[in-house]
Image 1 (cartoon, rainbow, N blue to C red):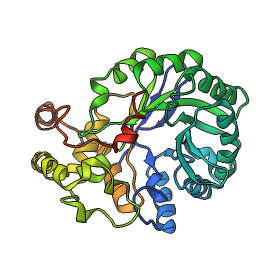
Image 2: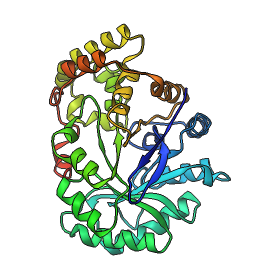
Image 3: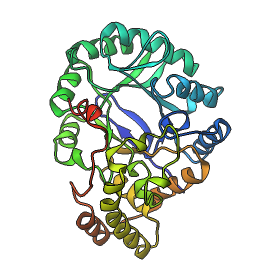
Image 4: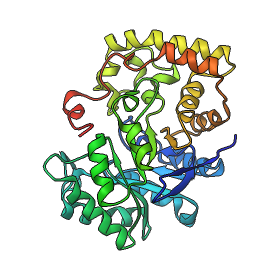
Length: 334
């Protein structure tokens, strides 16, 4: 296994491993997790050359940042920590399920994030979602102040429309745009996001590059989704009727991967990494065995024939079912 370094951004550049580690599932969104195994997974990730750890204050809420703070204690200078703000957390510590991009909320939130992470600065701070009631210039004005104060090194935005990306970048240079991107979610190729970030010299961070586990080949019906608080139980793409429509695509990709001497998950992750040297993937996992398989995808070389076959099997729009429920879909690409 060999993880190379990739550069996010040009005017405000940040060097990170080509694969980062999405840490959300260690405390949030994907059912129960073992804290000791999660910590061991972060340890193993750093051993394998992963330098980028991705979290957010809403994951838990707060418990994900606390977990990462424990994991990196004593070696903070060896990791790049990215967190996010904008999904509102009330004074009671619970999610309100509102989006809040107000400057005063952003200024207040960074204090808790740094405290939980046990650090005096954050390497990369994203606006998690765009607040429709707050001009993006105001949100990034406040975020830019955090950079000037030395509390944050680099800024990013998640799930934003091209025009919003441009407006935010004009206020303060963006280092990264983070959006879902996989063989099941290729929207950024056609909605102008990839073209925009490349024109502006902004790095691109792909989250859920394995389709929230769908592209690992392990989900055949809803019984394969863990009971309890697992996001996929409310995600339209994981409803039985949509799983049935999506399975033939996964099966064809699995056959292609087997013919190429690899697994479908490695194939899918290698495909994301092949999209350009400005693309960094952050597959999420809370277990060492999956982490090791993910990292090994960095050594998978996809031939032109395999890439062409992938485009035939999984073109844009092939997937049945939205990636979020309707209410959350409305908050994307603002």
